[in-house]
Length: 607
Ligand code: M6R
Image 1 (cartoon, rainbow, N blue to C red):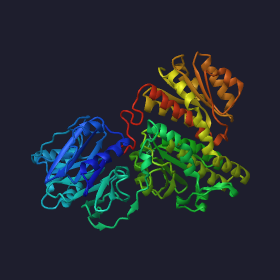
Image 2: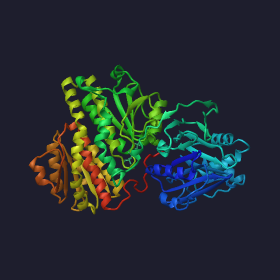
Image 3: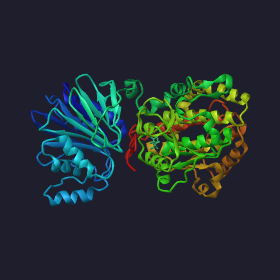
Image 4: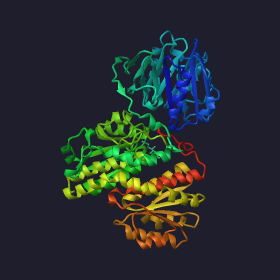
């Protein structure tokens, strides 16, 4: 969602801020802006639309050595230049960027208006700058602290004061803010991507923290205004991950990165001799798992569907009841928490507000939550009792691909660990470990379907709607396939259990609405053939993605996509590939903004 960058140091601030904003583009935004501080005065530039609009109005060179920048994803107020950040006070001496939502902004606004403050934007964020102004006497840090004490809601902020040019102030509560610590220069970022390539070390602020930066120092304070030491950590993002390289889009690049990403997820974690895996960061003893009677997985979007696959795997291998919950629903459902339930929170970004708040609700009730997270050092990674990093590498495209696959991979290892503690015999464990170790090659082989899927996508790009159908462990892949198509191509697509077809969705079947069937050679094979026949009998088109060479499928298919054979329990990691390509090529044919689909953000940091 919104992105923050801040800088103070010897470089040309405008160049650093624009680079930071570019690196934050992946989060999704609809407007952007910067404020730069030079010779005791702040100049602010903001524009709706893509960053090149802002680029066309910022000075190419400026002597400013400090500044703040923002990419906005509208919540309160339309997408306009005025609503874009930074927001300044009337004198223009304070400038502020804000991520998050100020819940009590209406009351604060009325109070400030009564004191004569004028508001020019429709945003909740603007109250912050006037509130800080109202408390400013001779100490900017104190003014920010007093203002934030009045605020209900979430914030990550960066504030610039023209009368205090050697300072840059940041604060966070519920919305991340990270300090990039360079040599003789300091950065602020809503995530470390903002300063990747510019700063190698960072400190992660916790909720309630404030930081006062000069070019050479940082001082951090907790919510009680006590100065606190923070651990300096290495920024672990590889800057090549934020570049497209030979690929036209991050989405395509990240699909192709899956063999390598899966390799990273499993390396050092497989124990072939024992037919199991080892997961280092769980912060629980194996014997603790004997008491677990059920597993509840909490997530949103693609992470939710990865959780559905994992629930199936856990139940199959470990015979422990497992269920997935929509985090945004769970949080308000007065969830039942007990000692025998283990919670897993799954999130690529580790910053999804719905998931974080659900985790806090469970933790407040005494529940134990493990994280399944990609982004190292993210809020969720730090909040949870322990967990498993999925090591997908940075995912830039808004639509998740490699993180989805790695979530499944790592949770499969988790299921195997539990399974081996229960009914899974050594021989089956060994067989699965053997298959898991061949996954990178199998995924590589599956990627070869790209050109075939491109042809199919071009053929069906004008479809009225698309149906995705599967059963069992691939049912969530049908849901994820439909989500991928919807979010990137804007075509209507729905995923259903193939068994559910005749309970309603069959009415949608017609020549203009093709059905994508995912069929593996397992338990559901014959039933799926029956479902294809139901569609064909109603003049529906069948696009069949399968591990099977069965002649009946070839005869029934309008399009037949053969993928490598694999143990059914691992098949989602292959069947997802044609779905991802289908979404990519159909969106390409329709000329969509593939890496940053309209209205969407990479990390959804507000509820
Ligand atoms: O960062 P998270 O994994 O918590 O994000 C959850 C969803 O917002 C995310 O998976 C979303 O659905 C993606 N755009 C899907 O491609």
